[in-house]
Image 1 (cartoon, helix red, strand yellow):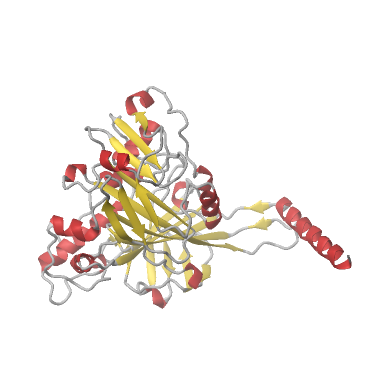
Image 2 (tube, rainbow, N blue to C red):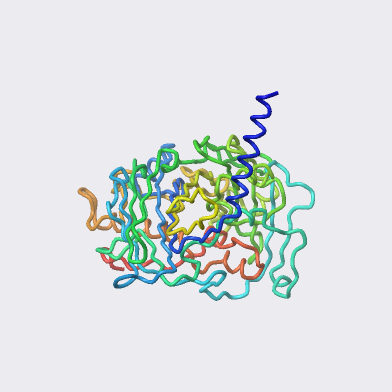
Length: 464
């Protein structure tokens, strides 16, 4: 009995501390820093002719990309807005990564104007050879433009969204990177075998030095890739992928053009009705667990899913017709690290006046043509295997062709790397137009996968 009373008393004491902390005044940080690290394979991780050749032989090369952004309510203390991130030696880049000043954003504001899209969007959801009754859900863009909202359509992950990134908060000081100032180029791809474990330092003109350390729990995630991506006799597509350490959940989506011009098809592995075209971005572990429980995400133990035949056929899965080509994207959500300085005062009467906050987000993604394995896709496209270089190189970090490679082959690799980089950058595309018409969040990546492109920058080493 005495032991039970002690346990009860301890529980009440802890509850009291938590309640006091909830009442503690918290003054949010005036400077925030985000570090996003994505592992990519397939179309999301191709890195040159050698990588393509490895895929033809059944391998799965991968690349890791960095996105760094700092935002501050403070103006620069000296000169203009600038920042540098010093990474551990194991990162095999840097050691100093430059961030370039960016335009101040406005929450909820887009900088692009879109032509009103025409046609329809067909939405499917759930794994299985046959689509459940009531699918697809059809969205007519013309009706949406007239103010008609599709019934029962909602975002299941709206509550999981992290607050606006530093670049979207409308703060006066924003910088993004990494950037190679010498070449005037973005330098986001990390070399093969890189690690982010160790001490990190961010110096900027807007805030005190930001120091944090990452452990193996928050290192670059292992690659995820499809071991099976084949059309079944029924017309459905069987997908199988590898187990991924530290994954908190999986999301699979497939998308492509419909049978008629202007029509688009979207399918998600969610077992419940939802529209979340950007669900494969970053989601915190706690929110991933909630979404797994709600059957929006697949569990970390799941390694297979079937795209229903109705959705696969409508988007031309496995088709050799490039106009009907559709894509399938898989994301393994990963861990997240958060740091705040100074630490929270233990006395709830003392306000917690935060100076800076850091968020490190991780995931692993892969993209292929639906029903067409990477090796088959590359062979079908007649990929040129000549002039191959070592897997894991970053052509954008080079200023001259490696020994044994011609200028022409090197420039071809750089052009491919530029296109892959543009795939992950915001821009005008079909999906964003869909989002503008429907009001459905996260439609941007849909358009990028369907072929929307931003003009690639001029290359100082390979003039057009």
